[in-house]
Amino acid sequence: MKLERIGILTGGGDCPGLNAVIRSVAKPAIAHFNATVIGVMDGFEGMVEGRNRELTPIDVSGIINLGGTILGTSNKGDPFHYPMGSAPNIRIVDASDQVLDNYRNWRLDALIAIGGDGTQNIAYKLYGMGVNVIGVPKTIDNDLEATDITFGHDSARAVATEAIDRLQTTASAHHRVMVVETMGRYAGWLALGAGLAGGADIILIPEIPFSWDRVFEAVLKRSKGAKFSIVCVAEGARPLGGDIAIKEVDKKRTDPVRLGGMGEHVARNIEEATGLETRVTVLGHVQRGGSPSPFDRILATRFGTVALQAASRGEFGVMASLRSNLVVTVPLKDAVGKQRLVPPDSQLVFAGRTVGTCFGD
Ligand code: F6P
Image (cartoon, rainbow, N blue to C red):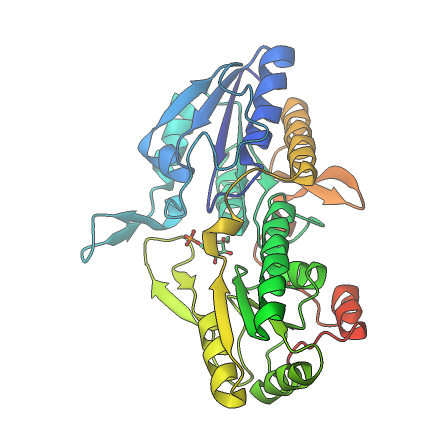
């Protein structure tokens, strides 16, 4: 298999560990395969618009601990639904031929696409058009199928856990209810993981619609004992019979819906219904920024090196994946088209319930 020119891009929302993957592909590609590594700028947007830069060993040195991505990223660059023009005259066009043209003009032998569900979906479609693509799964939400975990999730969960720890001391001092809103659009892994690790009293996730009465009962009960409560709410949580909280719909985005506001809604309703003093903290993009955890640095490095090995074998249309502690490759088609949600009867939920956590049901 000819592996002289390898393209690499980071797509969708950023997360800690992207640079660690770039490093783990570029270093051995240059050192062992004598290949040229072409960094595509700003995800698939750069593939459509023809923006790239060659990565040298110096470019990828000292970046394993760096958050963000040295290549830039975008969640508005889906080539199959590519936004042209500016509001209110946005036209959505199919620009996938431009991707193919650039792929050929740049003489790429392989393209490594690092990203979440949106990016892997695009990668899979491009594979169908003849692009030698290999996916690497990232996202703080951990909602990608066909891998036990995505990189970025562990780092975000650590940030959210630390936030809960800090909120707990002030909640206890003031005998307050503290509501903390985490990210997590459709899957509650982040709120569940941080909530369990931080000992939250109530955890509300998209997969378990909550009853307002159950939530009010739980905080009132706590107010008579410990005299404070921590409520960890995923941004995508919703009450029984109610809706998710949408902040904005932006047609340019690969996923047009931007969430936000459920934490505020929960805090306001708790205060009104129970009379308990309540505050809300929205963690937002703080969870996506900063240095990757050691776990994510190592996982990212394993993913990148396995992706490169697959490219060297001429194995395409696959994604690096963690399966029972081993990084392997899986067909991209197994990773796309559905989300990996928290099973309501999972051991994590069971563990929470057993130690007295209320899930609002
Ligand atoms: O998918 C990752 C994620 O961080 C979600 O948890 C969140 O809803 C979304 O991206 C936020 O997107 P943006 O950075 O475009 O506001």
